[in-house]
Length: 248
Ligand code: F6R
Image (cartoon, rainbow, N blue to C red):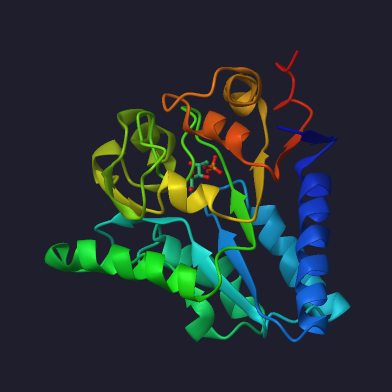
C-alpha cells in the first residue's frame, strides 16, 4: 500500500481535499454524479473543514455529490451529541450545497427487527448509485475499518456488529463514561469497502503508528482488518510523520 506522508494532518487533509475536488469537478464536467464513501471520528474532521473551505472560497459545488457513510452506533438518537448522523450534518452536510436526499448513513434509530432489511437496502442503494468512486477511511488502534473489528470476514456486508471493548474505551471520551458507549454499531462490511473504486485511509498521531505498520507491512489477515486493503488495487494511506514512524 503506498503511504503518502505529510508533515501535519492539516497538510494531509488539504491533499485529500484537493483529490476529492478534482474528482467532483471531473465528474461534473461529464454531467455525472460522484459517489463518496465517508468516515466519521476525529481523523476526517480537518478534511471536512477543508471541503467546507473549498466550497466557500473556491466555489466547489456538492450538487452532484452522493454520499454513503461507513457506520453509526446502535442504538443512538440521530440528534445525540455522539451520533454520526449529527456529526456529518454539523461537520459537512449543513455547510455545503449537498442535497440532503443524496446523503446516506446507517441509522441508529432503525427498529431492531428492520435492521437486516435496511442493511440489504443500504447495499442496494450503493449499487444503484453506481458504486463508491472514492471511499474515505480512518483506522482504529486495533486495525478496524468502519466498525469491522478484528475477525470480520472479508466477505462481510453492511450489518449490525458488536463493538470491541478496546473500541468502546477509545471512543469513550465522547460519552459520559464507558458504560454509556453503545455496544453495537451498524457498519458497511469489508467487502462493501473493498468494492470502492478508490480508497484513501487517513491516520494521524503517534497512537496510530503501530497499527499503520501492521496494516501496511504485516500479513494480510482478518485479525487486522485494514491489512485486507493490501488486496485493493487503488488504495493509499495518507499519514503524518508520527503515524508513519514505525514503518521500516
Ligand atoms: C468512523 C469509523 C472508524 C474510525 C476509527 C478511527 O466512521 O469508521 O473506523 O475511523 O475508529 O477513529 P478516530 O478517527 O476517531 O481515531
